[in-house]
Amino acid sequence: MVITTLADGISRRVGAVADTITAPFTDQVIRLGVTGLSRAGKTVFITSLVANLLNRGRMPQFRAAASGQIQTAYLQPQPDDTIARFDYENHLAALTATRPHWPQGTRRVSELRLSLKIQPSGLMGTFQGPRTVHLDIVDYPGEWLLDLSLMDKDFATWSGEVLSRIAGRPGGAAYLGALEGVDPAAALDEPHAQALAATFTDHLTSAREAGFSDCTPGRFLLPGDLEGSPVLTFAPLGPIDKPGRKSLWREFERRYESYKRNVVRPFFRDHFAKLDRQIVLVDVLGAIHGGPQAVEDMRRAMGDILQAFRPGRNAFLTRLFQGRRIDKILFAATKADHLHHEQHPQLTAITQALLRDAKDRADFSGAQTQAMSIAALRTTVEERRAHGGAEIGVVRGQLLGADRQAAFYPGALPVDPAHLLGPARAGADDWLGADYEIMSFAPAPLTLKPGEGPPHIRLDKAAQFLLGDLL
Picture 1 (cartoon, rainbow, N blue to C red):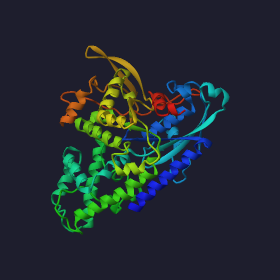
Picture 2: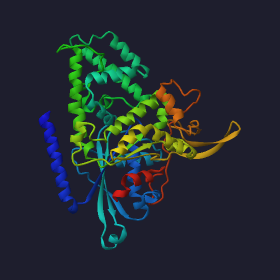
Picture 3: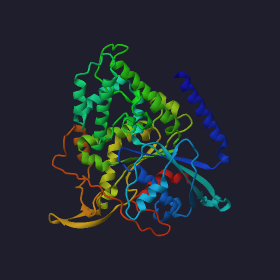
Picture 4: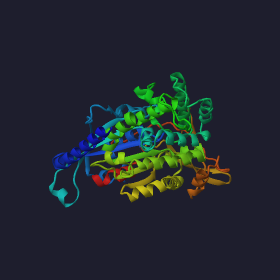
């Protein structure tokens, strides 16, 4: 472990020096990480972003596009042959078909390179020709990002935290019931261990479906080729004094540490630590619909995520970030098209409030963060309708899985976010009479003019925050 850590640190320092020496003679590369919590829309975001950078007619708030500095944009082979290519063409085809449908979501790390030909602005731009900037977009599951919080916790600490909050979550009672007859000091019985891990995984899956965010370990939900392996066959256990060497508790502890060492560490070393900018997509509306516990869980998850961008607090992170640091992080509340624009400020304010504690710490350490509400692909149109003697703003769109359209009003989001976060922090079971609905819309059929990308809400503003200063 010590040798590996030293090797990682030395290689990162050498890489940083090499980057500094060669930078003036090579094209600029910006590595943008795109991740998000469950069902936040990572695949649609990347597809729409790339389509709107290739055809920039809907990007007025992205200054490099609006001013004409971006002369052209084109896709190129990605630089890393060992990572899956983001399947942009098929995802775009799904969204722009005669009968459009949502593409399959993120299940692994993938990458896409978009090259931009940029004409420098200002006085120097008069004497310089265009330069090439490569935008490498790295897509990875948000569940994996949350795993970073495990690096600071031993098995006993993690188990205690999970068991303290599991009772109120979907599937939690079933796992606690399975745990009642378990003696952690007993000798390991592999079929019994597999059954416990399966019940715990069922709980994580149910919690994610219900809108909960912190569902670690993330690979339990997206196992890939690790499915059925011992590194994914453990679960939280109650405290025990001096567990025996061959006990269930000791074996689960060993597997937990192996998970951190062989799954979490390589991902952050090989992918996350190489990023320059990061966007984290969050389904805030889904969490609100899930209730106060889901909102509080999202608040804690956002705090854990921001820890990943704060080298210095954690010795592992300090070594990981030698020579590189993510300095801009955007938290984007997605599905803004499910709200009339009159409620967008409330959605943004709630997202900012969810971030407040952790954001203050990140800003203090030098990372610039921002929250906004977006829709990477607009699926609805806005209307005003009479309701209860007043007019309300609604959205209308094609219902997912149904051959009809419907108008939708999710409820009035509070102007003061404390009216949501207060009950959430207090552990309330519901919103005390308020009712927040959610509806699933299918992508709308598109008719795009030449030079236009898919319709969106504030995608150009997000691009300006993430990339504008680098172009």
